[in-house]
Length: 287
Image (cartoon, rainbow, N blue to C red; front, side):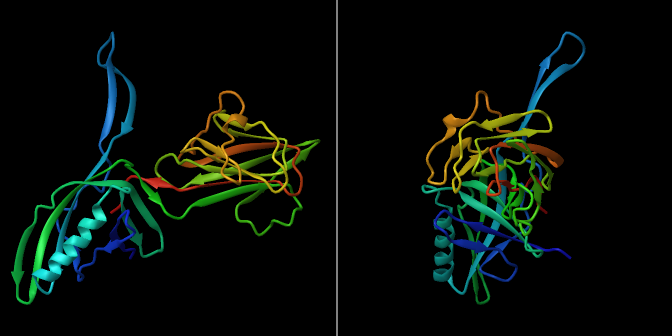
């Protein structure tokens, strides 16, 4: 049986793990773990009904009913203050982490406390307690897997056989062409991070749907260009902005859920050239 443990991680670096027998216990009433709310646009049409324009997931709203225990009121207050400090978001959002017994870890990021810590308290035999129902909003509605998936292509015969998910670049004249077969294990599209390790005079990447972008400047041996499709950034190994070296009208495409393929072309590639990507799967539901 696969079990999952929930915890909150604050911007201050503290992590509180919810267990059935610890100081912090999640009780009945936890909500918001399923599909987040959706914004849908349907315009009136000339005929019956309407015309669907788009749908997008909205802010994920969650209620976390937490009972905080202690040996006395002083201990409970200390534990409450720890939880309160974890929820402070002046220096960043809160993360809700789901750790599976299989070793996989999925996270909701950019969480912010909204309400619910007004406190209901009580005492039983040798135990003091206080109950908060933490209402939170998460700007990122999807669970992101902490462990990334990676794929690479290289010129054959380079001694890189130990690299996992390595495909070959087929050399034709001064051009090397390779295809990467990708299985996105998430429920929704994922944003890849591309790495182009030189040498190459230019590198282009094309999705199976025809979307593409090209890094149209030389990459020297030992240099690496990183393209982050989520952030829309292009930097070299020193972190210097190289976005201007993209060809006109770049489409920094996402990876659809399920199986897809990507074609990579590198002009001027040799045995040192390595094109790779990694992505973190995203899903909607944790139970």
